[in-house]
Amino acid sequence: MTQVNATCPMTREQVVNQYFLEHRAKLLDIAAFLDRLDRTQGPGSADFRETAMKEAVRILIDGQPQRAKRVLDILSDSTTELPQSAHGMKGASGAVRPVAASTGGAK
Amino acid sequence: MRYIDPHIHMVSRTTDDYQRMAQSGCVAVTEPAFWAGFDRSSAQGFFDYFRQLTEYEPRRAALFGIRHFTWLCINPKEADDPAFAREVVSIIPEFLKCDTVLGIGEIGLNKNTRNELIILEEQIALAERYNQLVLVHTPHLEDKRKGTRLIMDALSASNIDPGKILIDHVEEHTVAEVLDRGFWAGMTLYPDTKMTPQRATDVIEMYGSERIWMNSAGDWGCSDPLAVPKARLEMTRRGHSMALVDKVTFDNPLSFLSQSPRFHL
Image 1 (cartoon, chains in turn blue, green):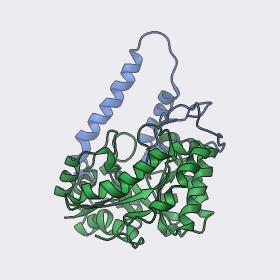
Image 2 (image 1 turned 120 degrees about the vertical axis):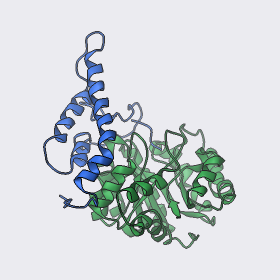
Image 3 (image 1 turned 120 degrees about the horizontal axis):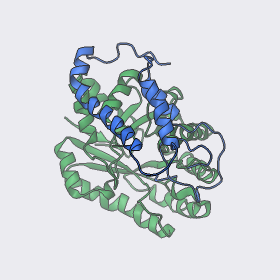
């Protein structure tokens, strides 16, 4: 794993002063999103993206380095199979579908 | 201040954007061929697109003192039909003679299919045959890590020097492998699906400033043609030296792109 100690030129206090409000807002967005899921109408079980997000959230407070990389790893396809064609595949969803593969908008 | 945006799709942007980029210090752009938001119905559609990239856009950019260079290919999304893709690839060599063409790109994978991989390998062979630089698109979201590894394996099977290949859209889970295997890495500053200026700056702090650049990949989607100067601002806000800021937004693109004799400012 890459050595990451002391690579940011700012002090801890400077980082908090500069970024806290921005990330406080993003944290509240996630909290409100989860609340919104709770308030939805009708029956429905947890979508695979919801499950993946909750798994990823645990990484945020585990005290270990490289959280962004590890969150991305959770949200990445680990299979080795290659479909012949993308025909009929759905768009990229941001998390790994439990069974079938996915699609999308490459640019 | 001056910078290079080495990956932006100006065919999708307005002339106002060229003006704002010039005012922000942009002196050159390089524009890879990409998916236009819809599948083209014939190879002739690509012929016209390649003419737009090699004839029209350089003139439009020049109005604002910006040098415009381009990369040609069939993009991975439209490469899933091998017969169609081969028809498009067959018209590329005549455009490789144009003064502003730097290489083959952005080739790569979209959904990591066998069809896409076949055409990727054939376009890598084209680049090798014509001694061209290569610009690589990596898949989005959950497909990125797997696709990036497949692409690197395909590239490593060729005889192209990895120092002449840039793998774009890296993120925290792919950048280390790309750099470790000797390739150049590009970070795309793109809302929602790729990097923010803050994360891109984090990556430079953690993985260093060698063989890495930043670009906007501005296109027809939600994107920002001024993303590179915004990342420069983010780096200076953190206290990084202007030498480092210039290295990743000007010197590094200049070094990589100058491997093509056609690139000059």
